[in-house]
Amino acid sequence: MELSNLTLEQKIGQMFICGLPGTAADEGIKGLIAEHHLGGVIYFRRNIESVEQLSRLSRELQQLPRSTPEIPLFISMDQEGGMVARLDHDGVSRIQGNMALGAANDPALTEKAAALAAKELTDLGINLNFAPCVDVNNNPANPVIGVRSFGEDPLQVAEHGAAAIRGYQNQGVSATAKHFPGHGDTAVDSHHGLASVPHSKERLYRVELPPFRKAIESGVDMIMTAHVIFPAFEPDGIPATLSRRVLTGLLRTELGFEGVIITDCLEMHAISKSCGIAEGAVRAIEAGADIVLVSHTLEEQVRAIQSVLAAVQSGRLSEEQIDESVRRILSLKQKRIGVVQESSPPEPCSRPLTPKEESEPLLRQIAERSVTLVSDASRNLPLDGAEPVLVIWPELRRRTEVDEPAVHRYTLADAIAPYAEEVTLVTVGTFPDSGEIRGAIEQSRNFRQIIVLTYTAEGEVSEGQISLIQGLNEIHGSSIIVVSTRNPYDINFFPEIGTYLCLYENRQYSLDALAKVLFGQLRPQGKLPVGLNPQFPIGHGL
Image 1 (cartoon, helix red, strand yellow):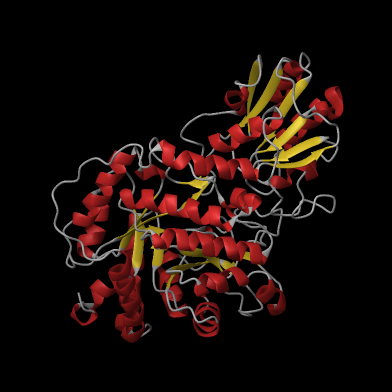
Image 2 (image 1 turned 30 degrees about the vertical axis):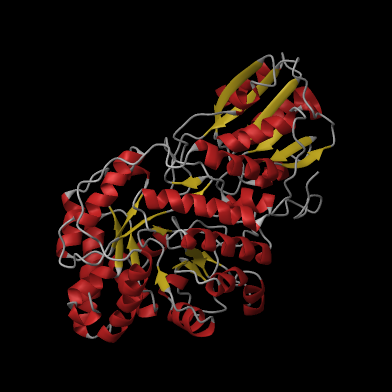
């Protein structure tokens, strides 16, 4: 449909992407599409039961009655890979995340991984991925980015980000570089508060911005904003999402981005607890955003759409600016999706989406090239398969926006079973209580080969995990082996450890590769994509 044929209400609807509560199209999302002319939807874990169900849901959404039936919906997801994968179900390839790819440091592998992900997303009717994350993670205390980043070297992040963009978009899925102008050097999670990056322009141009420049050069379809304050660009203390100086002055005018600017979700506390979601939607569009993301609450979604309409009707927002945004949106939809055609009821998609013989060689190669041996000063490796092995496994038991338990349970004990005659598994929480700590330490007394895995997603190792390792160290000294299964910085909380490896995620292929390294079946090849401390700088790996 031509822009000139759209009503104001239809144009504003195109500027919103919203979530839905369940695994089927409910009356809320139907109303948003039919009455408010919604331009797109976003999926979360709550929307997924199986690949078959998700495929049907995507097709159902595209076929819902609406006033602009020839304009397809954006159907989107945060499918970053690794530890941030909304889709982690049977039939889906479990593709590595950014920091594992950074440790392998082969952009060709990154492009292949993104292409594999895009092919499967397309099979499920998903045409927009909120990936890659091109934040430069140079703050070990960052509670929200961490392993979602390719690393701390801006040029390395830029190369891998560009490779991922090519992989997604060559397969017909729009990529989104995020979180502009950079969320890597923050110590606050913008889901819960307002962060600031107080560096000079010179530093921001040198560190934070190169990956976004490269993404723009690579033709990225979308860029997502950060709810973060950058005083060097915006002296009035306004987060980037709401700053015209950042979105229009820096991103549009200075960096020359001509694609679609989308906000991060406005229900995050950095926006919702300050100016509010509805007002935030208006301010974001005033700043230069083309699409507003409101992920969860129907009442807030409707209120935000209505507030933007009222702002145009009152003259606060010009219809010319609305037209510019909608023109970009329609152009991108035509380019990547085309026109929705009437079709018969969808048949269930095949499972697996990609035959294992096609996906597994790539995913095992990435995993085996990413395992990083940081230190083996105590010469605990390789392990002896004839000697009993104790594995202490941290189990993720609470869910956040960027920290979700795996759908399938596979531990290091499963991975090392082929190499060890006797394996004992002790499971503790990622925030273990005193009883779990005492139990694990007591059980360890009967073993000489002990592997403790740590899991940190929020910037600092939990006190319980620190107490556990300190207690084990008092008994066994430097003979224990510690493996970080998410953020690699954990060694800074127990530097006395003699053997330390970084895995960057706790998924099956990475655990299988780790098992091979532990028992001398594989030479570790990964290099640290971030510096841990002066002793273990970026690029280190034994």
